[in-house]
Amino acid sequence: MKNDKILDQLCERYPSLSDLRDRIAEAAGMIIDCYTRGGKLLVCGNGGSSSDSDHFAAELMKSFESRRPLDESLKKRFTEISGSRGKILAEKLEHSLPAISLPSNTALTTAISNDIDPSMIFAQQIIGFGNEGDVFIGISTSGNSQNVVDACITARTLNLNVIGITGITGGKVKQYCDLLINVPETRTAWVQELHLPVLHAICLIVEDHFYCH
Image (cartoon, rainbow, N blue to C red; front, side, top):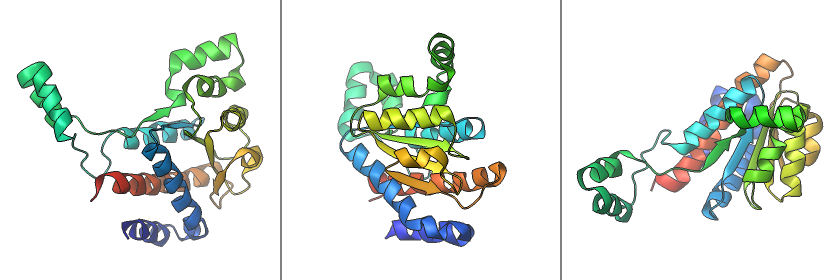
């Protein structure tokens, strides 16, 4: 299976992640199940983890390594609605796996911070965006970022599936996660260096499931 190849390559390049192989595969499976049911993914983090959140969502929202052409029926609909321009759109646009990076909503996060509470910038968005069965991923190197912890609590309250991606201890986040991927480092920079290949492997597995046949 290609999933095994993706995970083999990940563990070969990053041997310290070998013990997390099954959990990474489980996270990808959880996201696949969510998308199959018509759900979406919400993800957040602070600082470098905020960038990882944006990065991860971007890889899901457009092609990563595999082409995602629109269905022929949708292409036809574009052409019917707008002729030559519709045809261009039909050929260039791609299927998307819906993912929202919560830190990217600057106007909303600053409004929540100013009007409600800075620690709730992600939790409040989950109230608005989250539906039962969606997947929430909280990225925190320490696992103790209060705004990520509050987001995990809120996601669990709304019956989202919660994945934590942290450093080795898991911090406070771990008690609210359905699945914890705690990479075996404590130093912030080194934790973040391992988070990105984990996220890429998940993207590859998910994309392969839907678009490589």
